[in-house]
Length: 288
View 1 (cartoon, one colour):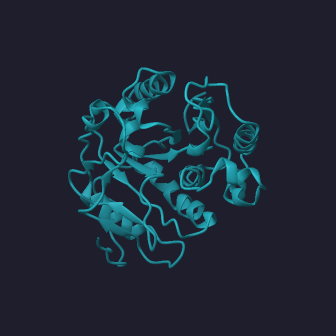
View 2: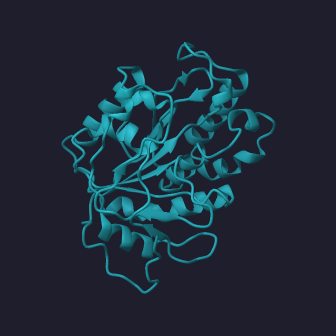
View 3: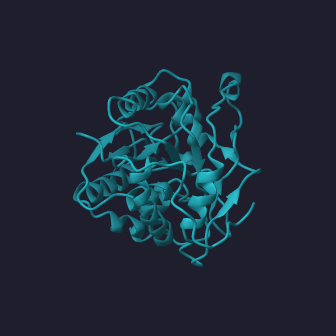
């Protein structure tokens, strides 16, 4: 891993000025959603078709996944061909056979890392040009959305040791890049408690604590009170049930930080998977 120089760099050569790209938060749930024909995957496919429609297509996808945690700093993937990471166990062979061969964007990664600043230290972000790739939080949703895999993808790690407000602050720095062709995608879950999963539960079946947490997030997003999301850890006892660990909530803070004031939100995949995983997803900057 490397840290780019803090010296000023020219505007990203690979990214042209563009219309303002949308920003997404996608509930990814089980890795099997990447290959199963279900309501979640079909919604991702439809969203991808819309994003590749008559409007200008993204030049770059920047994904913040719940599954790349880097205590001690933030990093961007900087390799030319990021590998597909199968970071799970106990699933059928068909899932391990999946590949997402989207190219990376090394030049853009270096320039972005130099332009962004760690909310903890004020220093530029680091670049991982060898160790990581695209984990299932990224490729499991991008594969149905953009199956041709011809849009370059970068992942941004999360420094899990830092408080939620700093993750939201870094999301605010991403806002300007939406007008340089960058589609920002946070991938996690509004509610994520694996220990409370109920196999076979319908999409409307859940727990009181899960429904209440999901509803509180939904209300704040509808009202545009996105700053308040960073205070989720102080919402009472239900937080520990909704997120025994909170890495799946943090990507929402990056997406919310990248939203401009007054932007309308569209909700999709608003149900639950296995009762304790909220699949609620959000898109800002797209027509309702």
